[in-house]
Amino acid sequence: MTTMPKSAGTSDTLRSGAGLALPDGGGRALASAAEAWFSATAECQREMIGFVSMRLEKDGEAMRDMAACKNVADVAAIQSRWLTETLHDYNAEMGKLMAICAKSANGGAMAR
Image 1 (cartoon, rainbow, N blue to C red):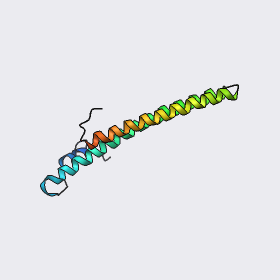
Image 2: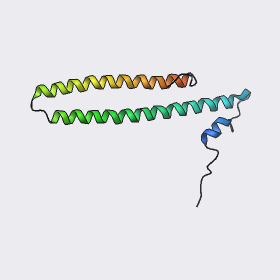
Image 3: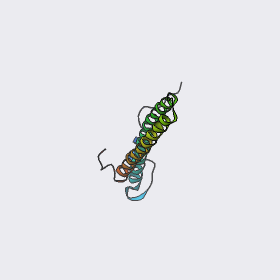
Image 4: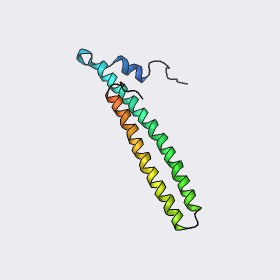
């Protein structure tokens, strides 16, 4: 059975700049930029997965509430509330994603 070594992972290789033959330490700069990009991408993905999970729960709750309604006025009120919350949630999520991107662009200098 073949096993993969537990040391020298991708980020170790990127961090060391090994295999990148760029002058003036450009390999290390490129490796650092790639590591920052991968880190920001992973953070964005985690954030989006959490957001989608939260929105699916809220959408399901709204659908259950509408299914239990006895008249059209109640359905319209629930739909209106759902639309307002949805727009608010998406706006807030875009702000979070932009903050992650800005933090990455600034070299991680911004606080979470």
